[in-house]
Length: 210
Image (cartoon, rainbow, N blue to C red):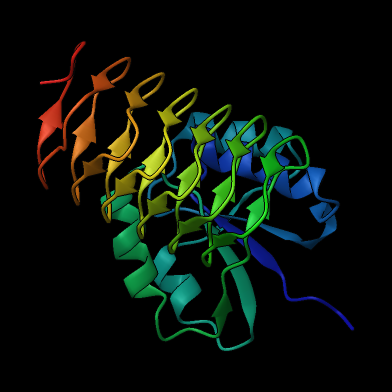
């Protein structure tokens, strides 16, 4: 049975990293190309160097009638939410991509469109919602919940029993201590150490994070 063609939404750096994950999973032949509304000339050239190209816009993708797969490889949490809504009526499946050089423990549930990049380490009893991104070398401890459209940037550490609200962002090399909650759409700056709950929509940075 022929598998549907797979589109990577976003031709920026993370989009091209996602294309590499697809290839590492042995699905390179399924790649139809990138989807991007406003690709730069440089990103187009970088895509072509990979043997791929920008083949459609998001609205063009949403108008397709044949079943297809898509990965929303856009770093902005808000943009992923918007694109997910635009594709809601399309015959699309959002695969989960887990790089073979990552570790996923027992009783880990990954929602549609979740991406686990190389070097990421997920412990046990973890739930991740829709279109969650765990970038390179991110660590997620036991009993944690990462809600829809949240993201952990490279080397971010989410300790055990942490809750990331929908759209929350953990910056590169930031640490969330055990049992804490980072509210919806909150941003934890790069290198920060979070020692108390972070309210929804807040931006915190520093050690300790404030």
